[in-house]
Length: 438
Image (tube, rainbow, N blue to C red; front, side):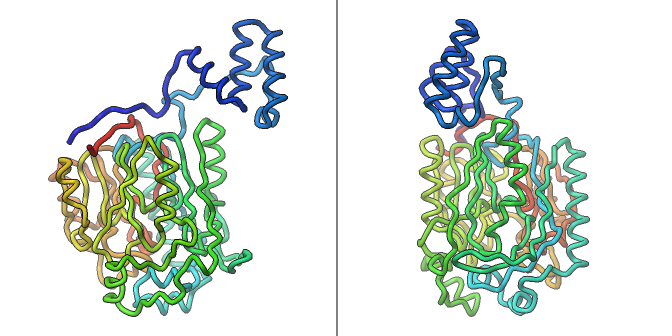
């Protein structure tokens, strides 16, 4: 496949170029420019220019600079947030928490995303904690996962523990919370920008609160921070009569392009997007609508291209257990949920790998996902992958590709709805922005 170098996470520029850009932008950047100008022509001029910018810019007024304050330049080496794809060397990652995880109330959007055999579980336990012994084991597994990531040289960050059983009310609905277990669902890093997804489940409306201390820290250190428009999650966002009774119903509805979420307002989960440099792939799913996809397209244009792809999937929700890009021009494609646009990847010179069937036992509870979490792996770099210790078949597949397997067992954590990719958001990967899909 062809690969074109586009740009590093942040550019090193000459001082004069920075002055020109910043003076044009104004605001707090303009105030910083005033300080740099003052350093050249003298403290008196600096004070006059700084006062001028402060008097005309509300942002500068909120963050005033004095002649003695240093101007900090964030270089690619010290930018806390920078990732362009799913496989560059991983340096820092957010790993979710199982603590206090609660079963979401059995609302129409939850019903549309879960399997029929678990509906009685949701009807009985919605709003309560998941089984405590099971959660305790999941917590232990994720702690071990964090230890192994640190041993592999990765900095691990965690969201805040929150009591998700507290009921909350908006003008449009009442709900309890769920968890902060799957940061991949709510956060996506594109370049040096961290984007908070609006989400689509009412039980996840306030999930962002667990991550805000971390995001504010990254922002103060120079990262960009964007929150997508928060949906009201009023009744109009959901097809209240969404006719799910059997798996056959799901297949028919998905083939017709019918989903439980409407186009009333933008919504998306970040886990429906997967990155390959300047190209980002996304699916329309039960939690990601076309308005949400269009918001991302406009927000990231013109540097990034958003490609909508689809699958033969009766229950589309999150792309990374169906289509997981693991290297430049290298993708795992679920044989049970084939990609309808797979030929365009082959024409682009990509290698499409079919992962083996998962080995998770039928009697193991998977309240929120399928067995194909076996392919929901986390790449530490192009030659190292974190994979479930019990999934020996996929371990052999990776080894045949020349990729070393880092084995961890997270079977109980799987039950809460995710594999290694779901349980993480990669904050910083060492690499540059490139094009892999021409």
